[in-house]
Image 1 (spheres, rainbow over the protein chains, first blue to last red):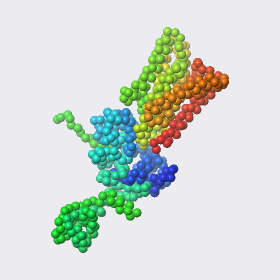
Image 2 (image 1 turned 180 degrees about the vertical axis):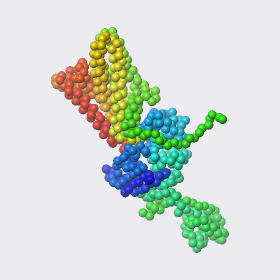
Image 3 (image 1 turned 180 degrees about the horizontal axis):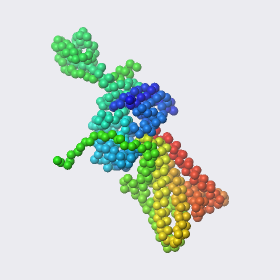
Length: 303
Length: 281
């Protein structure tokens, strides 16, 4: 079953701003990155998925339900972590998460148990009886994640979960999100404007720009075909390029060296052989993945 | 084997019942009721509500003690009106705790992303505050009633006591409905708790002199209708009409005051719902 499907989804606000324009995507369960610049329409899409905003036109289904009509059922099975501050500073974390579990429909005892569990999973077990106001930014982000996780949703919507975190905190948060997606078996949609960050943890990516779909695909499909071999020689870059071209490869000259598309296992040998023949000083030879960002840059340039 | 071993039992899916929207509303209501009295909060949050409750209870104890010596000082219905100022202070402390805190903290998106509607949130909070105000009046009233029952003799007298007690609860309900709906509406417009508290007190205090001015300069009819100018006197005048409270001349305009109470509460609730339809979208 698809996690999220949208068909020609369009959202126009009363003030004339078009936030989403004929967006059609089909997202499989797993960890999904939703990337786009600020104002691309990510938050609008999340609100529509939660059934908090009605779409202007087009269809949308979340976990097989229509959020526009079955908003309450959808929201009972979805966990949402907003981008901005959303925690009351004068409440104890355990009490707050318990309360949120009850509002999600968990009976009293289950709510208390699962609140402790959720706080343990995000790494706040020891500190759970402290007031939230005394927490660091990283700990607050974890409480936000815990309240989204407490009712054991089938889908987590995380809006910029690494916002305001230092590099170590970002890594820890991303590792946690990946764990939720793999070990816990909960599908996650991670919104981010930092592509490099989410591509590391996602199974698939949905990129939107100006409310339009840029690309939606599995990460593996996006990167395998585009691996390149970066060759850096001390001198004779031109000669080497000519020799490789003659051997049937299509090298491109880059400021830092030659970029040779990696055809198969043989490419290495061909390149090394050519360098040995020409007796050039080899400085560097490494396989490089095209970063997904570059894919989008070329896609956008082609449009 | 050492006892300090930690077993990571991993993540467990929840297979128990998921109760729906009604349960979510009840949970929010109970949480609100606890919040109004500072339960589950820091000691600082308990000081103000319990100080007002304590003073009201003390007044009740004194009245009961005086009553035991002779005739009652005031009826049960009059009690709610006489401690109205404390009810206002209680509202000024509780209403901002209930709604301003959620506004300022940005907590609303967390509620609205759960099986709860915007109107559910507003009405659950209002019900919580109304119940809290009623309880802070009805508790001391019950104390007085128990004292009163022990100071009268014979089943007939006890029955009379009950007949006197029920209007007391009714007047407390009117006070609770008007004060809480007005306070919650005001608090829902201010994110800062101190500002909200000041505004709530202002709404009640600023309007009080208007009543005095109208009585001073108006004709006979204007004098009897002057109490419409302030929410606390509207409540009192309604008590005069329904429960024969003393100390106010409203002539035959009783139903007008009854209507004013209904209109005031309805307007506040509608405005509150409008407010929550727009906020945090």
